[in-house]
Image (tube, rainbow, N blue to C red; front, side):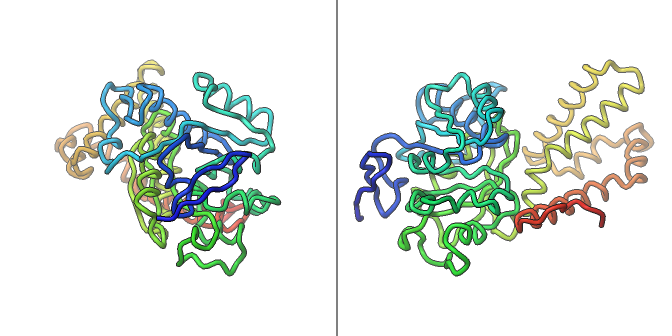
Length: 350
């Protein structure tokens, strides 16, 4: 295994196989390039997990049990991030990061309009900007290509395939079939978490990489994302649908939860109690499905012939709720793909 050193912010950082991720000693720095809602949620989940017992082991979930995602890990990386950099462009964003991560500021550096500096100091980069920022050249800043060399870049950009990221940095003729590190490039990994990362209940999808990640890289990516919830791996062509289901899904479920609470309020329940009851009912139903219960069978178990549930379900079916929800997911999937191509007004009239 080859060993060499790279110059990073005045420090000689040992690397193996061309990647600082492969090193087994010293601190690891994770930089979030474009630290918005998801970036903050991911940092919060990682920092909370690490701070619980000062190790890489997962902290208990709010319910008092270990996060389910932690149970699906194959192993713990030899190194995990211990230093964090949040890159933002506005004072308001910097203030938001500072407020959200106030308990961990000793481990977090906030940089405003200093993306290059943040990447230069990173071992791993989390790309969390909006897809349109790619078109604005966030990865084409002078010196950025050199700063990214040999680094693992985890992208959470909706609708943006690896090929688009590669082209932004290295041009349109870049081959993704060969080992990027061997070609002196960075290694992009596409993932899709959601806002439930903040409470370590995200459903995160990792796109399969070509060529495959090394065991060290794969373990690290999985470990980072398991800090914030469950993880699944899917082929790249499924990522737009996964973005619609998991990325947009919380908003869809929130709308349905709100509608159920509205109906209960209309029938006399206090708003606060109705909202709590609807949320707990949705959570309990979801946990039953996660434990192996099929949704259709669960629905049938609750639906007594001639009962109130049957009547309510008939109204929902007559209103084409099932079809509308499915169409909403399909529409969001198409929009995610178009956003990834840099299109504007993706939700215009159809």
